[in-house]
Image (cartoon, rainbow, N blue to C red; front, side, top):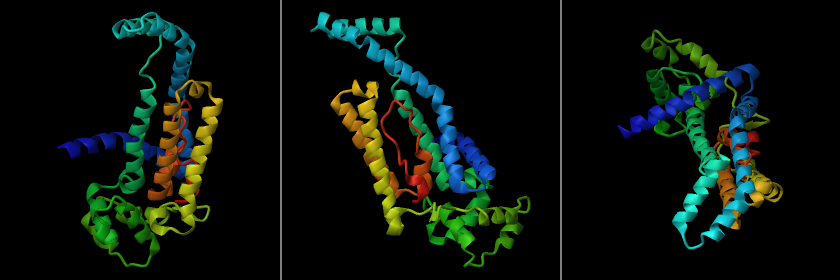
Length: 287
């Protein structure tokens, strides 16, 4: 029951993301460029939220002296301090929990992005569940339970090295244009700038190992630059600033090494500007 509930939530998030990704791909005809366009579209969608969060953060900087005075005036009385701070926040229309919204939005997007990337048959091609199961079983063989089974199936179909009996699937699903789907899959190009976007550096190694290194370094530089130049970041404590920096770099290295390029590129620029992490900023070129 719990799994079904999680799957329902994932579908609610991933289905519209899949349509958006499909639109970008059909518009540009290049999956790499479609990913880049998709990241810009999500950034535009999140822009109003980013502006609101930024304004709310500026209010905190402006009222910080008053907060400090309250703490000094009522030192030793935490209940009174909390009550006075609450009155101040209400008066200034400051929302102390607003900083949690970007994290919540990012986690929601993360669920949808992962689903879209690893289940293109479901969310980009919008294929019948039964056909998906039959197709992955036929083409992915032992990897049918893998999270990347559909990606493996796409590569197997595109390789042309195996003679799959797609005609039998067409007979099994008479109301579905199975051969039309197969033609779509064969034209679904996962290459961009000479790299296969489904590659995973932890599996293929070689030149792809550059990706997590570049992702980590770019995240480090962007986070450090924002900590130095952004007045809101400057107001944070060292634990908060450098904790977020370490989290950003670590997450970039992890995603760059263990996830395909498409995953990292879709996550790029998802976070509002008031946060310092830049997820896999360079990973859109390889995997």
